[in-house]
Length: 344
Image (cartoon, rainbow, N blue to C red; front, side, top):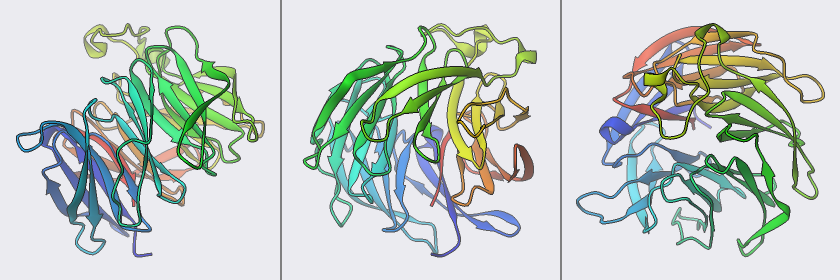
């Protein structure tokens, strides 16, 4: 495959920036406009396809999922097809089964979806839907057999088997609880998928769940703080302004070799938590102040690079990953309201 690309959603101006990773840093190739309100997308790098959640606009009365083709040389994204979502836009999209299945979670709409994707990137209307208040993310296991939807308001992870027909069947038990008032938000699998890590928005903790790979069920084991104690952030309260009240405001989570990284938006930090052989986590080894209000960041496939975006910044930061340390390589213009990052 050609050199890595980095895609960044700039929700403030309804665009997606495409960067090429070079020895010197990031080279911005193009900015694709017309992705109305896009704050998240999923990438199928093998097929050169991007699936972007977009909001209703003058031409489309409903939100939808836009399929775009990615030109790896120019960075341009070309719209191909669009499937409407009458229930509202997605806050999180992810792929499974070699890109043939797309999963989504809608915060405002309070529903999650499973859609088939054909060989040309055409997304079907949802084949299955689930409903929980303020769903914030969804991931499937690498074998595509189990799917996990995270409800921030209900403090739970809804766990399902995903059938060949894309039906969602609740596991036994159907949900795994998170601590009351924690506000679970984004999730990441451990390398062996026997552990699932979940970052909470309201308490800024990384929850560790034991996962049974055969049954798919989760068991909560521990919670480790991932926000800077020197900031003296307070426990968040749903629907209150975190910045105004100096609340904890956890956002995104990703793994590198032996480390869980978590972002916190009020203090604009990235925290590093070392992973022990049993999957347990250390207290954070340090905090890196990054782009202001870092809702989204991403890690390269080889886990040597990390790119962070900030909702109150027009630049992204590129870091070289060195164990539990980050070394800033440069900052690069992207656009207003940058809040989602993926390598391609």
